[in-house]
Length: 185
Image (tube, rainbow, N blue to C red):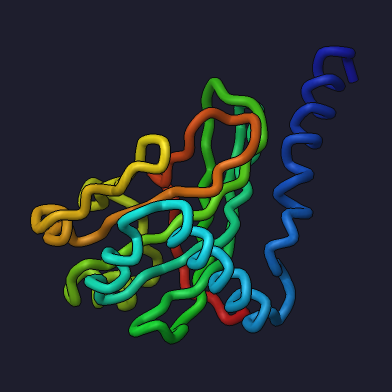
């Protein structure tokens, strides 16, 4: 193995390590752990992202992924597990995963919530064997703790994504290309 390929191997291995050890309940029958993390993520989101309580109140359901770990060095990926809540109760568990390729490097963690604002969007999500974030998802972002600016127009969007609690070395977080699948924890 040449020095260059050995270095690339070491860097790729180091980037993949946080995904393997992300402490997200992967591989364990941890529905109670997932629910506890979802509760904490929801509380954090309500405190840190003004306007999300109103979104939750108006949503038909919400998928909360309390911890996504994303790592990459040219090749990358992300993984997390969470719960779908309808009227405040967990009805299903899901995993979110993505793979990326391109100019990238680093590791980050974040949480996100998908608010299903219509019964049709929620039904489509629940009946699919694998649902991917597409053009019908609106990203709600805040500026320095400002409100999301929830209004009548926003509430008509079928799915609204809120990303929060970001920490790490990769700039920004995007859910594009993330695939959601139902799991049994």
